[in-house]
Amino acid sequence: MTGTITSTSPADPARVLGEFPEAGAAAVGAALDAARAAAGDWGRGPAAARAAALHDAAEAVRAAGDDLVDLVVAEVGKPLVEARAELARGVAILRYHAQGALDPDGATYPSADGRTLLMARRYPLGVAGLITPWNFPVAIPLWKAAPALAAGNAVVWKPSPEAAAVADRLGGILATVLPAGVLSVVQGGGDAGAALVDGADGVSFTGSVGVGTRVALAATARGIPVQAEMGGLNASVVLPDADLAATAATVAAAAMGYAGQKCTATSRVVVVGDSAPFTDALVAAVDALVVGDPADAATVVGPVIRADAAAAVVAAAAAGGTVATGGERLDRPGWFVAPTVVTGVDPHADVAQREVFGPITAVLGVADADEAVRVTNDVEYGLVTALFTRDLDRALDLAGRFDTGMVKVNAPTSGVDLHAPFGGEKRSSIGPREQGKAARDFYTSTRTIAISPAGARA
Ligand code: NAD
Image (tube, rainbow, N blue to C red; front, side, top):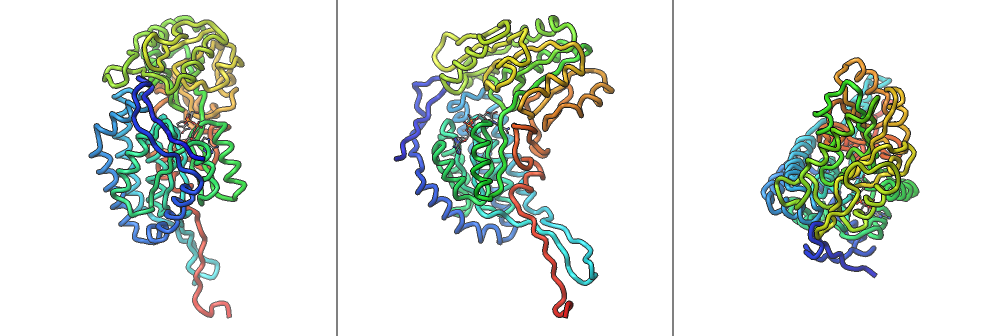
């Protein structure tokens, strides 16, 4: 039995944005069949044709502009300025991978006999199954689909039900410029996702650790490649010599922007030495953030995605430490929670060990830089760390000691470059990196081919 997804706005839950029938196993199977039928011509055809189609896709997404941005704001509560930036990034991702379709697709090697042509060449996987979360409903699907398509794969994409309307619109835009069957959208939740894992030739997942780990196990059991980018519990580490006001403003935005609903958000602030002055500056910076309607260009902190997400923030704030600011729902319609800073938190407390995925950050005081490294690394996640200091020697030493896939110095944990490798360590990540040139490693299989002259071995 399949149902219907009713998409509503977290800023105004009475506002319905659309209804979408869920794809059952048969519909997912039909999308996979259509993709498999289309994959041959698409993957074996000229790379220049794939490049041209991706350039057309970039133009089509750019042309959808304000309409798509407004839908992102309404459906996932992303503040307008960030939604505009996400759309611009989506266009840039498509252009980058359009160009990448024309990159060299292999290498040659000197052969043992000197006459054999020995080469290693990348081949597409076939049908790439993409499973995406709701929080970057344009950029994440595109940073998976664009390199998959550029490398010659067909794509079946299962978006989050929380972003069904954006997915429907984005899928429709892409369908206008791609050959039939090359990219299709299957709407639904876990069952549709599981059916996709059951039939695709490779699966790229982004979402929570629990679901991603299950997806990776199921894909591995089928013997297909899998990549899973999952949660984070990212620390901003503040050394005593850091610029107090600038660091507080950067950390406040990284923790609370988009209501903390980024895998790269700062959820722990590790302060070396006397933590009181920095905590005061952080609380002041957090209190200065504009909280409200995500459609307002001044808003930095909008709603969280669902009622239970709001309740989770309130519960986490009450579970340990001292609430320095926030800790409660806002008295207005929609899923709004006050940006929350909790101080005096034990590094092993739940709020310092588990991703809440909301506007909450825990301040942890430590005695010295070595303890900061220990506390920062003492979680099961490993996505990103930010270090704040004016001491270059310190930065060079410490940057290599954090076990996260990304380390930034004097910059927010949030924000990634579309042309650099992206991914985490430990439970944050399974499989090869996403984005940039690294993305090809997942969407292709390298075959070593040796072509010898006829009769050479007679
Ligand atoms: P989620 O894990 O609940 O869902 C992710 C996707 O998996 C959705 O499309 C969902 O429908 C699907 N799904 C659910 N059950 C499934 C199953 N059994 N089989 C296959 N698919 C299934 O995550 P979410 O709430 O949409 O997103 C928030 C999470 O995503 C946070 O943990 C956040 O840190 C993480 N995230 C990570 C990154 C990254 O790149 N590391 C980026 C953005 C978000």
